[in-house]
Image 1 (tube, rainbow, N blue to C red):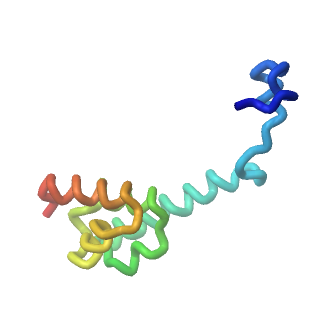
Image 2: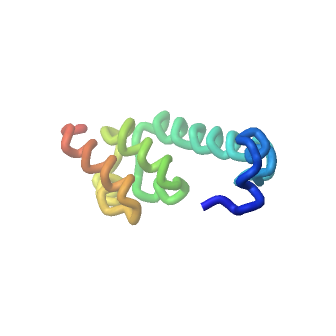
Length: 101
């Protein structure tokens, strides 16, 4: 339900009045770049251990499960399959079902 004072505003005015989630311009993009670089380093290493996953949030873990399952150790695969977040578990289950090495 809209606040009564916002009901008379048009979409552009509503957008201009909204407070952004991340108030530091470029911060989110920087965090994504750091995560992508970390995953690239893991890929270059040739093996992903369970401890490597500790530095990743759910999107990073999903990327590992989806794209790099074949270089995950059994411990890393088990960690992904048993992750606290259902997105990660689902990505891992799909990767496991595809029969990645």
